[in-house]
Amino acid sequence: MNSLPVDPDVALAQIVHACRKEAPELPDSVIASAALLAGGAKARTRFARELALKPDLLTS
Image 1: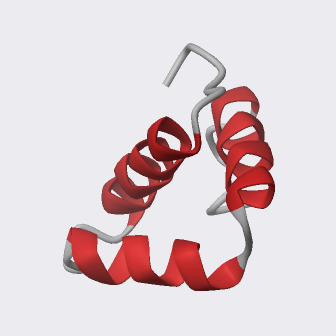
Image 2: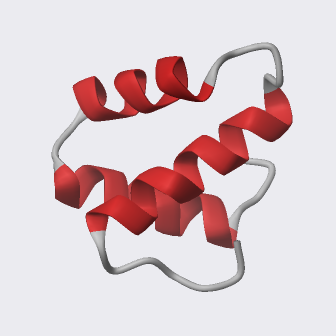
């Protein structure tokens, strides 16, 4: 998760990856669905960038 995503699909994959580390019991499809429902492509990209910059964002 070192690179900053530009493509919304890459951002979604990075969000799923980060969330899977914190909640491995959740299926990828559930995480992806929640991310898709939570905001548009720009919001997902911003969130993925924030996760890349602050890996503990989900637990802090």
